[in-house]
Length: 317
Image (cartoon, rainbow, N blue to C red; front, side, top):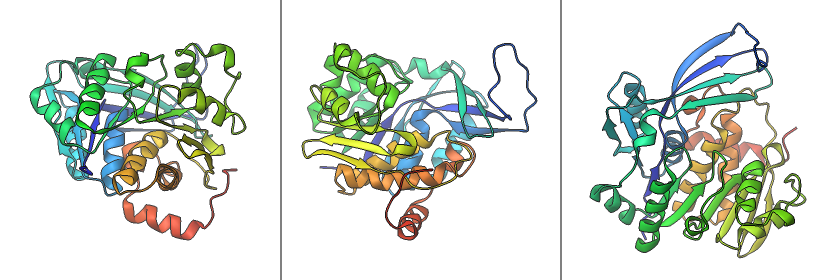
């Protein structure tokens, strides 16, 4: 099987504002700083996979406007194979506020991302030749379903990060080999399977395995991320808690995307799912110590050095 990684997903220009706190309804705050960076869940994840050492290819839709240029430059800088489409709609944008506690809010204007439909022969060929297909939910679900079906038929491993959260067709989930969700997304996807009566009010480290096993009624393997409590991996070998790393976060934007991209890079190297999650957890811990999405994604050498220095993983304070 090929070890190549294909990411299909969104690409945005992120407009990031640092604020003392997240503003409430009707409130105006003065930002303490502002930046523009390449972003979008698909773009973040493919760059994370490439910086972690993966041979990565990206399918997305960009406009012909100025906002597309820094995104393409970032892809080239990470040595990603660029199969992005050029469309007449404007490149997607995201307005992000980050407060002094490293929490964030994000508003996305999909723009060109919404046009990513009707996969071409070249795109279907890229899916068939990849070892791993990684997708998220910021592009049309019909495209995600079509890509998953093509990958499944070709023997390409399908990894789906079900974010932003939404209920998903069971037919799509049955094509997924690894489902990556946070605690909120896990409940929404599981509720869409008709399992609401069996679900807890919230997912914690104590009950994540039970929720993961509900999801495994349709998905082969599940990774539930729990922020500072680490991640729970539920697969055919049982359930495993992978603790988080002890770090001081300054910006959590893109941390989940970093984890997803690096996780797939680990799988492509032959790591087990638990090993890949440990590898990705270290990368995510590095990313939250930096500002921005793409700018915060670590290089492979940085991940390896962090893992060597950190010793046994312990929960985030």
